[in-house]
Amino acid sequence: MTEKRKPLLVVEDDPALQKQMRWAFDAYEVLTANDRESAIAQLRRFEPAVITMDLGLPPKPDDPDVGFELLQELLSYTPDAKVIVISGQHDRANALRAISLGAYDFCEKPFQPELLTLILERAFRLYELQAENRKLQEAAGGSTSGILTRDPEMTKVCRTVEKVAGTNATVMLLGESGTGKELLARSVHDNSSRKERKFVAINCAAIPENLLESELFGYEKGAFTGAVKQTIGKIEMASGGTLFLDEIGDLPLALQAKLLRFLQERVIERIGGREEIAVDVRIVCATHQDLKTLITNGRFREDLYYRLAEIVLRIPPLRERKGDANLLAHAFVRKFAAENRRSTPTLLPIAIDAIEVHAWPGNVRELENCAKRAVIMAEGSTLTAEDFGLDPTEADPEAFNLRRVRDESERNAVVRVLGRVNGNISKAAEMLGVSRPTLYDLMEKYGMRS
Picture 1 (tube, helix red, strand yellow):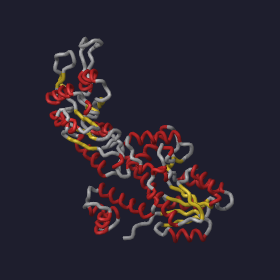
Picture 2 (cartoon, one colour):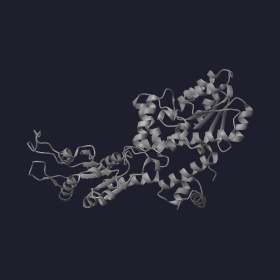
Picture 3 (cartoon, one colour):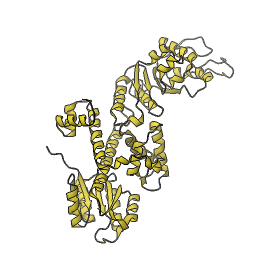
Picture 4 (cartoon, one colour):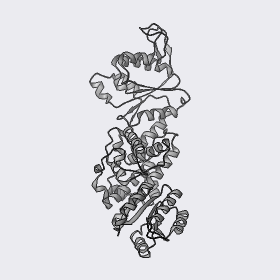
C-alpha cells in the first residue's frame, strides 16, 4: 500500500518554476496556485501544513504588498501552517518583513532544491510536533495532570503514576531539580481517592532545622517562647489527603527518627503535648540526592528509606528526554502568550536547534523560565535563540546535513511509536505503515533491541 503523500502548496505565477518544484519535490503532493484566489481555494480544499510562496503575484507582480496581504490572509485561515517565502536576493529585506508577519522561513532565488528540501522537512516536522503538542494539551488534566512528553522513559513514569495513584503506597520520586517532581506528586494525589482532600507540600531543605519539627508536627500553646496558641502541623493538616515531603534527603536525623515512628504507628504528638493523634495521610516524597550514598555516610536512616521507598520512580532529566525540550518549549510559549494576551509567536529554526542541543541543567523549570522571558522580550511574531537566552552557535552544525536530519526524524518516529504501543512490533509496523521486516531493519540501523 502506497503511503499518502503530504500536501505542499506552491504559490508561484511562473509556470516554469511550478514545473521545477513539482519535479524537485515529488515526495509531496505538490499543489500549485498562481494568484490569491487560487491559493485560498487550494488552502480551503486541502489544508496543507506547509506553503511556499513568491511575494510578487498578480495583479501587481512588482509590488510585494500583494504577497504580504496574501501571507496574512493565509495565516488567518490556518495560523499553524508554515509559510516559506521564496524571494530574489534583492528582496531579502521583504523576506525578513514576511517573517516578522508570521512566515516560517525564506529561501533565495534561484533556490537550491537540496536546501529547500531541508527547510520543507523541518517545517513539516515542526508542524507535526506542534500538532502532537496540541493533542497532548487537550488530553492534559487527566491521568498525568498536564505532563507533556513524547519520551518513552518519561511515558513509563507517567503510566506508573497512573497505576499507583489509586493505592495508598508511599511513593518516592528521584530526579534532578526542575524535572517536575512536585507535578508528579500532585498527579498521584489528583488521581487517587484522596483528591477531594488537601495536598500539603513542605520543602525539608527550605525550613531551618529548629523550625522544621514544629512545621511538621505542630505545637501546643506554651510549648516554647512565642507559642501563643495551639497550631497543627503539616502532617495533621494533610489528614485524609496527601503529604508531599520535598527534598527528604535534607531532613535532619533527629526528625528522621520521629517521622519513622509516625510511619510505623500513624500517630503524632504535637510539641509540648502528650495526646497521641491518629492521622490518615498518604506520603509522597522527593529528592535530588542519592539516598543510598547518604545512608552509607550515616546521614540518612536505612530503615526510614525502606519505609518511604515502597514505590520508587526515577525521573529522567530533560537532556535525556528525546524531543521533549521543543515539545515543552512550544507549550510554554503558547501558555505565556495567552497569559500576556499576545498572539502565539513562531519559533525560528535556529531557536529550535538551540533548544534541542542545550543541556538544560535546570531542566523543565529552566526551560519554562526561558520561554516566559522569550514571550515577554520578543519584539515581533517570531522567536530567536537569543530570545530564549541561548547562544545560536550552540546548535550542532551537523543539524543542517540533509541525511542526518532525515535519519533523526526517522529514528524519532520509530522510538515514539514503539513507546506508544509498548514495544509491540506488529502494531508499531502498522502505525508506521511499513512491514515487520522493514521495522526490524530500522531498529537494527538505529541500534535498538527488539
